[in-house]
Length: 168
Image 1 (cartoon, rainbow, N blue to C red):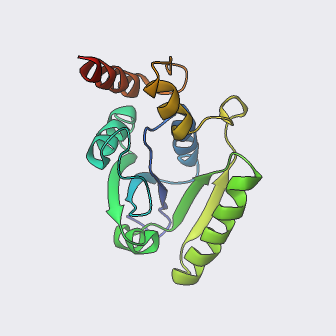
Image 2: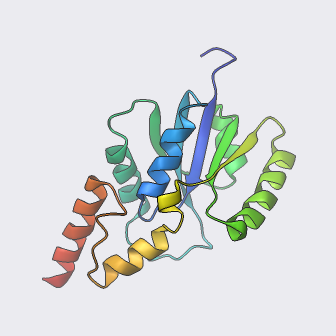
């Protein structure tokens, strides 16, 4: 790897990964040579998600199987420590609105304080996906709603498999 290569980390819970997440990651490849989609272990997050962390990593890998520049990973602890360990110099975050910005802006400043060599890049979502969140997809799926417009085919298959096993 040369000094001009940029590795970006796109961190989150991705429970499940949505088409909005996919859009942000694929657009990040226009300025990063590699994007690591990193599922965070967070003790402050709900323990009972739709998918385990291992399942989320596998789903991310399936969604981006067509692009070797995208890697699925998981991490514990501080994002800046994970970024340093992977040689990443960028964090990519999608912003749906002002509410997202306030939190993400504070986090970006703190991360820069902890790791001055890392920058945060904020991307606005595709206009047609600005309402989309994993939480909404989980809620719709949990009551049997159609989420096919919001997630990639591998994710939809896994959601439907999960529903089928729960109803038997």
